[in-house]
Amino acid sequence: MLHKFIFDGVRIVLDVHSGAVHVVDELAWEILERFSTATQEEIKEALSGQYDDGEIHQALVEIEGLVHEGLLFTEDPYQSSYQPRRDGVVKALCLHAAHDCNLRCKYCFAGQGQFGGPSGLLPVEVGQAAIDFVIQQSGNRKNIEIDFFGGEPLLNFKTIKKLVAYGREKAKGAGKEFKFTLTTNGVLLNQEVQQFLLDNHMAAVLSLDGRPEIHNAMRPTPSGKGSYSQVVKAFQEYVRQQPPAGYYIRGTYTRHNQDFSRDVLHMAELGFRDLSVEPVVAGRDTDYAFREEDLPALLEEYTRLTRQLLERRQAGEPINFFHFNIDLQGGPCLPKRLSGCGAGYEYLAVTPEGDLYPCHQFVGKQDFRLGNVWEGIKKPEIIDNFRQTHIYNKRECVDCWAKFYCSGGCHANAMAFNGDLLKPYSLGCQLAKKRFECAIYLQVKQAGLA
Image 1 (cartoon, rainbow, N blue to C red):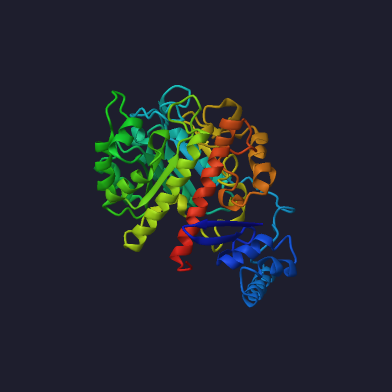
Image 2 (cartoon, helix red, strand yellow):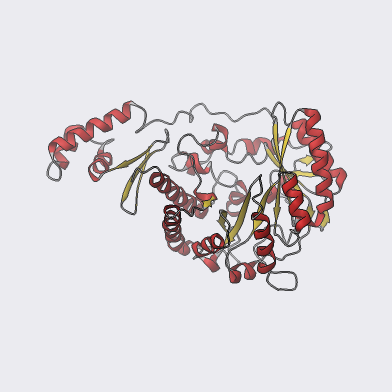
């Protein structure tokens, strides 16, 4: 399977199953159009009026060589034999420190932080039980990840401090290592919190949507005021300290800012270099949700963003844009390429009550409640369903050129839009494929291949 595309005049060919990327000229492009359906003599005859016969012959020899090397027209090595892991190892938790929030973001999938239930804060003893649970369920795995999430987790900062200390101590005794991350809207990111993150080498995901008018419209306070000025100041203070565990500015773009490249560049001008701006996922009844007719403009905006990122890189001012980060030399491990994030079996969410769910986007949906941190998994059939959500069980994914990059897409989005874990969200797929083309093009340019 090949995927061929042209980006700003550069002809790029991806051999899907080997991952090899080739930059080709117009002649090779024309040959590859015919290579799998015509003989060499037929190809020579079809192109002899356009190109020199010697050049055609040489190009055919080079393409044949790449085929024999396993770099063109390779078969899928996994489709007939892949079986997902069944060892029951849990490697990451999304620990909900607070089911409450101090902002009222309009697109919040968590119902303003409460996930369809009562507001509440994670008790210390529940968090400790969650840490004990993941250590026990991690098997021989040494590295474990915990993300403090919400709502707004800093509403429960005292508990977070106690749980980080508890986790470090328990990990030491179990021969494990914890990587802690905090996802925050920034309202409570004061100097004490910043120093705690720095001292404990905690990664941070910082929520900012871009320009003031965009951020304030979608992320207001409970009184309806904008939150931009307050959170930007805190984020800049924190980032200037060069946090050793890193950070990401994480934004959401909606139908109201389809020119989202301007928001990316605005945040870069604020001094942020590690950025992620992602499309909103919302019901069709909202005014900020995307529609099919928006797709051409969104695809063109990714093209525009790609050119701008390339210009910045060439000017010595690069941006690390999360959605354009792919590894053409091998990428993530095989299970992640075929099954995605591991939600529902390797990665679980924990509520303030101690209930377990497949991920944060399923919290509150009782049909997906797995069990709790004291008793463990009570519905293994749900775990089995998520374990089977790999690309070879998704009809739309099997023959898709992007399958090893998106790994089948987000399970929560599939359920939200199609009511089926095995049926990907179509608009999300189309945006993802465009992002991968942009990412491949940037890698090609960075390698000096075009």
